[in-house]
Image (cartoon, rainbow, N blue to C red; front, side):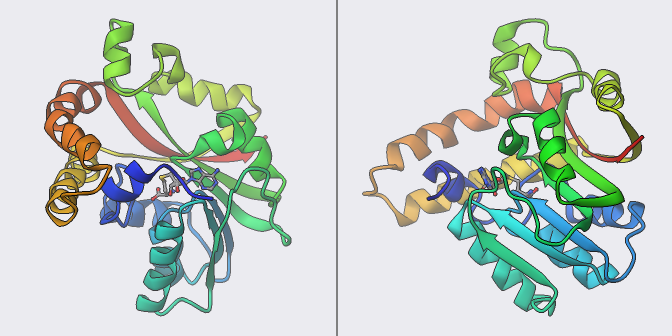
Length: 248
Ligand code: SAH
Protein backbone atom coordinates (compact mmCIF):
# COMPACT_ATOMS: atom_id res chain seq x y z
CA UNK A 1 0.00 0.00 0.00
CA UNK A 2 1.46 3.32 -1.02
CA UNK A 3 0.79 6.56 -2.87
CA UNK A 4 1.63 6.98 -6.60
CA UNK A 5 5.38 6.91 -7.14
CA UNK A 6 5.59 10.31 -8.84
CA UNK A 7 4.88 12.02 -5.48
CA UNK A 8 7.53 10.10 -3.61
CA UNK A 9 10.00 11.13 -6.31
CA UNK A 10 9.08 14.81 -6.66
CA UNK A 11 8.48 15.44 -2.93
CA UNK A 12 11.17 13.20 -1.45
CA UNK A 13 13.16 16.22 -0.22
CA UNK A 14 10.16 18.14 1.17
CA UNK A 15 9.60 18.39 4.89
CA UNK A 16 6.34 20.24 4.35
CA UNK A 17 4.17 18.89 1.53
CA UNK A 18 2.05 22.00 1.11
CA UNK A 19 2.65 25.71 0.32
CA UNK A 20 3.40 26.64 3.95
CA UNK A 21 6.94 27.66 4.82
CA UNK A 22 8.37 26.60 8.20
CA UNK A 23 7.52 30.14 9.40
CA UNK A 24 3.84 29.79 8.39
CA UNK A 25 3.64 26.42 10.09
CA UNK A 26 5.05 27.99 13.25
CA UNK A 27 2.60 30.90 12.95
CA UNK A 28 -0.27 28.44 12.71
CA UNK A 29 0.95 26.48 15.74
CA UNK A 30 1.12 29.68 17.78
CA UNK A 31 -2.23 30.94 16.45
CA UNK A 32 -3.99 27.81 17.72
CA UNK A 33 -2.82 28.51 21.30
CA UNK A 34 -2.00 24.86 21.92
CA UNK A 35 -1.56 23.88 25.57
CA UNK A 36 1.30 21.59 26.64
CA UNK A 37 0.03 18.02 26.54
CA UNK A 38 -2.70 18.81 23.99
CA UNK A 39 -3.39 15.81 21.76
CA UNK A 40 -3.26 16.27 17.98
CA UNK A 41 -4.44 13.87 15.27
CA UNK A 42 -3.14 14.43 11.73
CA UNK A 43 -4.63 12.50 8.80
CA UNK A 44 -2.25 12.51 5.82
CA UNK A 45 0.62 13.62 8.06
CA UNK A 46 3.25 13.49 5.30
CA UNK A 47 6.79 13.80 6.65
CA UNK A 48 5.45 14.82 10.06
CA UNK A 49 6.79 18.38 10.22
CA UNK A 50 3.65 19.78 11.82
CA UNK A 51 3.35 17.22 14.62
CA UNK A 52 7.12 17.19 15.29
CA UNK A 53 7.73 20.95 15.39
CA UNK A 54 4.57 21.61 17.43
CA UNK A 55 5.58 18.89 19.89
CA UNK A 56 8.95 20.63 20.21
CA UNK A 57 7.59 24.18 20.38
CA UNK A 58 4.35 23.66 22.32
CA UNK A 59 4.74 20.36 24.14
CA UNK A 60 1.84 18.76 22.25
CA UNK A 61 1.52 15.04 21.64
CA UNK A 62 0.21 13.47 18.47
CA UNK A 63 -0.59 10.70 16.10
CA UNK A 64 -0.11 10.98 12.33
CA UNK A 65 -1.38 8.55 9.71
CA UNK A 66 0.05 8.54 6.20
CA UNK A 67 -0.15 6.17 3.27
CA UNK A 68 3.39 6.90 2.02
CA UNK A 69 5.98 4.60 3.56
CA UNK A 70 8.74 7.02 2.54
CA UNK A 71 7.08 10.03 4.18
CA UNK A 72 6.09 8.05 7.29
CA UNK A 73 9.69 6.89 7.67
CA UNK A 74 10.95 10.46 7.26
CA UNK A 75 8.43 11.58 9.91
CA UNK A 76 9.79 9.06 12.43
CA UNK A 77 13.34 10.21 11.70
CA UNK A 78 12.34 13.84 12.14
CA UNK A 79 10.76 13.03 15.52
CA UNK A 80 14.07 11.47 16.64
CA UNK A 81 16.01 14.44 15.30
CA UNK A 82 13.85 16.95 17.20
CA UNK A 83 13.83 14.84 20.36
CA UNK A 84 10.07 14.31 20.39
CA UNK A 85 9.87 10.63 19.46
CA UNK A 86 8.29 9.85 22.84
CA UNK A 87 5.44 12.29 22.15
CA UNK A 88 4.51 11.70 18.51
CA UNK A 89 3.62 8.48 16.74
CA UNK A 90 3.52 7.95 12.98
CA UNK A 91 1.49 5.15 11.47
CA UNK A 92 1.96 4.04 7.88
CA UNK A 93 -1.58 3.30 6.81
CA UNK A 94 -4.59 4.39 4.82
CA UNK A 95 -6.31 7.11 6.89
CA UNK A 96 -9.72 6.58 5.27
CA UNK A 97 -12.14 5.93 8.14
CA UNK A 98 -9.43 6.33 10.81
CA UNK A 99 -10.79 7.20 14.26
CA UNK A 100 -8.46 7.75 17.24
CA UNK A 101 -8.81 5.47 20.30
CA UNK A 102 -8.58 8.45 22.62
CA UNK A 103 -10.29 11.77 21.80
CA UNK A 104 -8.01 14.59 20.66
CA UNK A 105 -7.96 18.34 21.24
CA UNK A 106 -7.08 19.13 17.62
CA UNK A 107 -7.98 16.96 14.63
CA UNK A 108 -6.25 17.98 11.40
CA UNK A 109 -6.11 17.15 7.73
CA UNK A 110 -3.89 19.43 5.65
CA UNK A 111 -3.77 18.98 1.92
CA UNK A 112 -5.41 15.56 1.91
CA UNK A 113 -9.18 16.09 2.25
CA UNK A 114 -9.83 13.37 -0.35
CA UNK A 115 -9.32 11.07 2.66
CA UNK A 116 -12.87 11.92 3.72
CA UNK A 117 -14.17 12.31 0.16
CA UNK A 118 -13.99 16.13 0.32
CA UNK A 119 -14.11 18.84 2.97
CA UNK A 120 -17.51 17.94 4.48
CA UNK A 121 -16.70 14.23 4.72
CA UNK A 122 -13.28 14.94 6.19
CA UNK A 123 -14.74 17.22 8.86
CA UNK A 124 -17.27 14.48 9.70
CA UNK A 125 -14.46 11.90 9.97
CA UNK A 126 -12.23 14.16 12.12
CA UNK A 127 -15.19 14.95 14.36
CA UNK A 128 -15.33 11.28 15.43
CA UNK A 129 -11.89 11.63 17.05
CA UNK A 130 -12.44 15.09 18.53
CA UNK A 131 -13.28 15.88 22.14
CA UNK A 132 -16.27 18.19 22.70
CA UNK A 133 -15.08 21.77 22.24
CA UNK A 134 -11.99 20.70 20.29
CA UNK A 135 -10.68 22.27 17.10
CA UNK A 136 -10.75 20.87 13.57
CA UNK A 137 -8.02 22.04 11.21
CA UNK A 138 -8.44 21.80 7.46
CA UNK A 139 -5.76 22.73 4.90
CA UNK A 140 -7.21 23.34 1.49
CA UNK A 141 -6.70 25.26 -1.77
CA UNK A 142 -9.02 28.07 -2.81
CA UNK A 143 -9.25 30.30 -5.87
CA UNK A 144 -7.21 33.45 -5.43
CA UNK A 145 -8.76 34.58 -8.69
CA UNK A 146 -11.57 32.63 -10.30
CA UNK A 147 -10.21 30.97 -13.48
CA UNK A 148 -12.03 32.48 -16.47
CA UNK A 149 -12.07 29.12 -18.27
CA UNK A 150 -12.09 25.42 -17.43
CA UNK A 151 -8.80 25.07 -19.31
CA UNK A 152 -7.16 27.44 -16.86
CA UNK A 153 -8.59 25.46 -13.93
CA UNK A 154 -7.08 22.31 -15.41
CA UNK A 155 -3.80 24.18 -15.82
CA UNK A 156 -3.92 24.54 -12.03
CA UNK A 157 -4.30 20.73 -11.89
CA UNK A 158 -7.91 21.09 -10.74
CA UNK A 159 -10.44 18.77 -12.38
CA UNK A 160 -12.72 21.76 -12.93
CA UNK A 161 -13.45 25.26 -11.61
CA UNK A 162 -15.99 23.72 -9.22
CA UNK A 163 -13.28 21.73 -7.40
CA UNK A 164 -12.38 24.81 -5.33
CA UNK A 165 -14.10 27.96 -4.04
CA UNK A 166 -12.95 31.56 -3.72
CA UNK A 167 -11.87 32.34 -0.13
CA UNK A 168 -15.08 34.11 1.04
CA UNK A 169 -17.23 31.25 -0.29
CA UNK A 170 -14.92 28.66 1.28
CA UNK A 171 -15.30 30.37 4.66
CA UNK A 172 -19.07 30.50 4.16
CA UNK A 173 -19.10 26.79 3.33
CA UNK A 174 -17.59 26.00 6.74
CA UNK A 175 -20.31 28.11 8.36
CA UNK A 176 -22.94 26.24 6.32
CA UNK A 177 -21.61 22.98 7.81
CA UNK A 178 -22.26 24.41 11.29
CA UNK A 179 -18.76 25.61 12.17
CA UNK A 180 -17.24 28.88 13.29
CA UNK A 181 -13.97 29.64 11.53
CA UNK A 182 -11.89 30.60 14.59
CA UNK A 183 -8.45 31.02 13.00
CA UNK A 184 -6.87 31.06 9.58
CA UNK A 185 -3.32 31.18 8.21
CA UNK A 186 -2.87 31.61 4.46
CA UNK A 187 0.07 30.64 2.26
CA UNK A 188 1.62 33.24 -0.04
CA UNK A 189 3.37 33.02 -3.40
CA UNK A 190 6.81 32.62 -1.80
CA UNK A 191 5.46 29.59 0.03
CA UNK A 192 4.00 28.20 -3.18
CA UNK A 193 7.40 28.66 -4.81
CA UNK A 194 9.06 26.69 -1.99
CA UNK A 195 6.55 23.87 -2.42
CA UNK A 196 6.57 23.73 -6.23
CA UNK A 197 10.03 24.90 -7.26
CA UNK A 198 11.71 22.61 -4.72
CA UNK A 199 10.31 19.69 -6.74
CA UNK A 200 12.31 20.76 -9.79
CA UNK A 201 15.76 20.35 -8.27
CA UNK A 202 14.63 17.09 -6.68
CA UNK A 203 13.47 15.84 -10.10
CA UNK A 204 16.70 16.92 -11.77
CA UNK A 205 18.82 15.16 -9.16
CA UNK A 206 16.63 12.06 -9.37
CA UNK A 207 17.04 11.96 -13.16
CA UNK A 208 20.79 12.16 -12.83
CA UNK A 209 20.82 9.34 -10.27
CA UNK A 210 18.30 7.11 -12.10
CA UNK A 211 18.91 7.47 -15.86
CA UNK A 212 17.65 3.96 -16.68
CA UNK A 213 14.58 3.91 -14.46
CA UNK A 214 11.23 3.15 -16.16
CA UNK A 215 9.91 6.35 -14.67
CA UNK A 216 12.57 8.66 -16.05
CA UNK A 217 10.61 9.69 -19.17
CA UNK A 218 7.69 10.82 -17.01
CA UNK A 219 9.93 12.70 -14.58
CA UNK A 220 11.81 14.31 -17.49
CA UNK A 221 8.51 15.43 -19.05
CA UNK A 222 7.38 16.95 -15.75
CA UNK A 223 10.66 18.75 -15.15
CA UNK A 224 10.39 20.23 -18.64
CA UNK A 225 6.78 21.40 -18.38
CA UNK A 226 6.27 22.18 -14.70
CA UNK A 227 8.05 25.54 -14.26
CA UNK A 228 5.96 27.19 -16.98
CA UNK A 229 2.71 25.47 -15.99
CA UNK A 230 3.19 26.47 -12.38
CA UNK A 231 4.07 30.10 -13.18
CA UNK A 232 1.19 30.50 -15.65
CA UNK A 233 -1.54 28.81 -13.63
CA UNK A 234 -1.12 27.64 -10.04
CA UNK A 235 1.00 30.60 -8.96
CA UNK A 236 -1.51 33.10 -10.36
CA UNK A 237 -4.82 31.46 -9.54
CA UNK A 238 -4.52 29.19 -6.54
CA UNK A 239 -4.35 30.08 -2.87
CA UNK A 240 -3.94 27.71 0.04
CA UNK A 241 -4.80 28.05 3.68
CA UNK A 242 -5.30 26.26 6.96
CA UNK A 243 -8.66 26.89 8.61
CA UNK A 244 -9.41 26.22 12.27
CA UNK A 245 -13.03 25.31 12.96
CA UNK A 246 -15.16 24.88 16.05
CA UNK A 247 -18.67 23.42 15.98
CA UNK A 248 -21.39 25.92 16.83
N1 SAH B 1 -0.26 17.10 5.69
C1 SAH B 1 1.06 16.88 5.13
C2 SAH B 1 1.04 16.14 3.79
C3 SAH B 1 0.17 16.73 2.71
S1 SAH B 1 0.43 15.96 1.13
C4 SAH B 1 1.73 18.22 4.94
O1 SAH B 1 1.01 19.21 4.85
O2 SAH B 1 2.97 18.27 4.86
C5 SAH B 1 -0.80 14.70 1.15
C6 SAH B 1 -0.41 13.50 2.00
O3 SAH B 1 -1.50 12.61 2.04
C7 SAH B 1 0.78 12.71 1.47
O4 SAH B 1 1.73 12.59 2.49
C8 SAH B 1 0.19 11.35 1.10
O5 SAH B 1 1.09 10.29 1.33
C9 SAH B 1 -0.99 11.29 2.04
N2 SAH B 1 -2.10 10.43 1.64
C10 SAH B 1 -2.71 10.33 0.43
N3 SAH B 1 -3.74 9.48 0.50
C11 SAH B 1 -3.81 9.04 1.79
C12 SAH B 1 -4.67 8.14 2.49
N4 SAH B 1 -5.69 7.54 1.89
N5 SAH B 1 -4.42 7.92 3.80
C13 SAH B 1 -3.38 8.52 4.44
N6 SAH B 1 -2.54 9.38 3.82
C14 SAH B 1 -2.76 9.63 2.51
